[in-house]
Length: 106
Image (cartoon, rainbow, N blue to C red; front, side, top):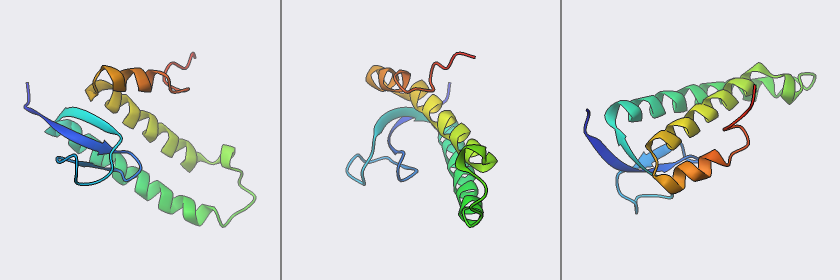
């Protein structure tokens, strides 16, 4: 088992802090280095997709709900919340389980 460390995760800023006073955060997580690498990779992917979306936004004939890039961002956001759920405490898990897409029935 890899060593875990406590981090303070900011979804809005797409970052984490090792010090709770370093910046604003939403979730306290107990994660290993491999999980932090996954968070960082997903954040990078989301940033690239949002840059693409900024260009796409200039094309008003493509509606948001038909936009593949927005679907890709939503998918990554769900992955982020799945990781937050996995590495969070019971309060964090309970919060994520209340999100509308967490228990989607297919």
